[in-house]
Image 1: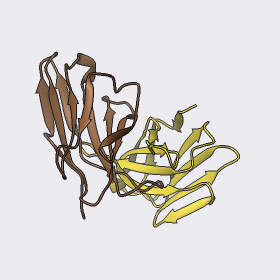
Image 2: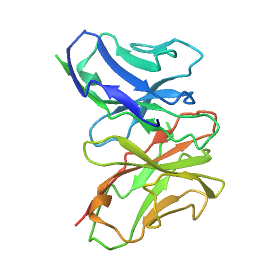
Image 3: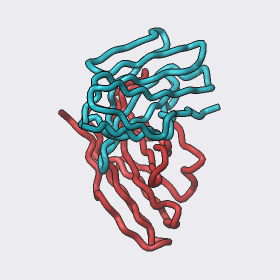
Image 4: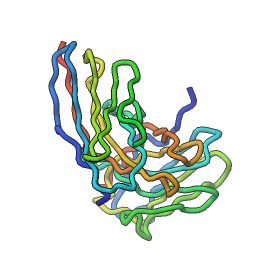
Length: 113
Length: 114
């Protein structure tokens, strides 16, 4: 019940295209959903995060869509660029506890020029 | 921009030896975490630490592991007697407060057990 399931495992997109990564969770106590971007040899870097009281959050080319009833959330990268090529992790945590992050398995995104 | 600093970047150790991984969290942060990532797998929570005590630990964080904040700036993870399966990237993270504040990660220490 603590799992976060992420798909696809890998994704190849052409420059200018839309990249979509999906995550699903079981634990309805989760109330914070961040996305992290990780480049090789680097630590995860926070990209964007959402709380379940909103259905969508947009920051530049990055948008999180959140469906509370379906217990799913997704990351959309508009106008994908080669520099976006990285591994993306969704995560979830529960406010008020230790706030440990439960991560998905990651999606390796490749954006071809 | 302030960042979390981890040393060393790579540690090679013989099985059974003790290792200490070091982290300097962002200076005004109060919550500290260790995560690990086995090659090609997801990032897994190990332990959270606040006010000089462990808030929560995972089942991975057994008696071989310990954490300490020996002074006002460092946060360390000690593995007392390393095993082959401890080989992984270890990430330190910190956040300014609870309430789902962003956790900022360091670039990790790659631990290789021979």
